View 1 (tube, one colour):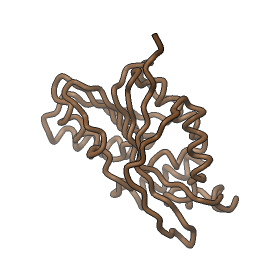
View 2: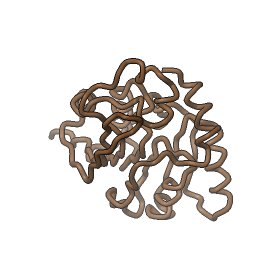
View 3: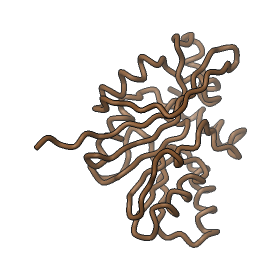
Length: 210
């Protein structure tokens, strides 16, 4: 996938947008002292909200591949008094955090931009503690998109070209180690003539067997 072209689109037309498709914090039920990652954080709005929810004894990271977005997020951070936040520039397939170090992960309409979704969810599984959970909003389809759409960086950047089918998405979750899924909300809509599904859902890393 042409990541550079997608990044260019983000820092141009879409730099004032969070490219979001669902507020996840309402479903995550964060607690004081928890550690959480906002994956594909954009300008960091939900990252900062999460930092307030986990309090000074907790910590929140925001990760985005686009330097301009992280620059905007840092600007927002410096305008406030939060000390329990750090923003990272990185791909979702290689998250620079330790194994089993987080209580929760949120991601808002970002994972669809990555071609290898199994790799992303394996990273989420790796960094979550046993019993840790994620809440993700992302887009899917009932039937595969045409190849020319899936290979079009403009379509991917427009938050529909990177969508895979519901069946493919659920298989990616299982391949990464997540065997149960709780769906909070789902919306069907049409984007550029293609039928799309926006879904917000939760998964959990299983506790190790005794």
